[in-house]
Image (cartoon, rainbow, N blue to C red):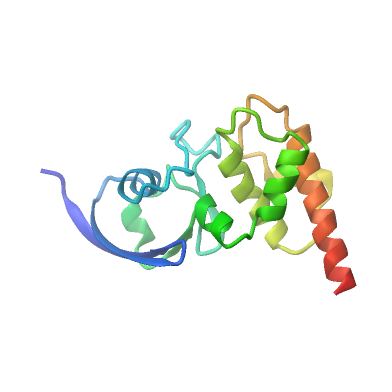
Amino acid sequence: MTAKMAISLTVNGEEVETLVATRTTLADFLRQDLQLTGTHTGCEMGACGACLVLVDDHPVHACLMFAVQAEGAVVETVEGLTTRRAIADLQSAFHERNALQCGFCTPGMLVSAYGILAAGALPSREEIRDALSGNYCRCTGYEAIVDAIEQTARLRHEQEEQA
């Protein structure tokens, strides 16, 4: 018999209270229990970045965290960022720059990019590359992704200066 534990957390702005098997990863909980399939499972070792989510505003590999460890936390997935339009400009830039092809890595890349840009500074291309070092993409070669993030950062910076 699998041990279960009661957890309470906020996911994409919604309070969630449920029983979860103690060995269930946060990625599996989000995908299987909550049907939030934007969180992908790739390597399941924290190396590819496909499973990135925000936990209390910090990017976290959901494949390396048990759901029970998220007790009391605020979790936001790519669906939550999309719903509140926090990444609409990034999604548009990814599309314009052809920074997505198969799309498997895209949710994790968008969560990473959100984390980079949430700091509010204007990151250099090297800083963007460094921040993406935990994300693996086989299709785009990264230049288009870096271009899209740089474009979004520049536009946000210009908008802040005009405000």
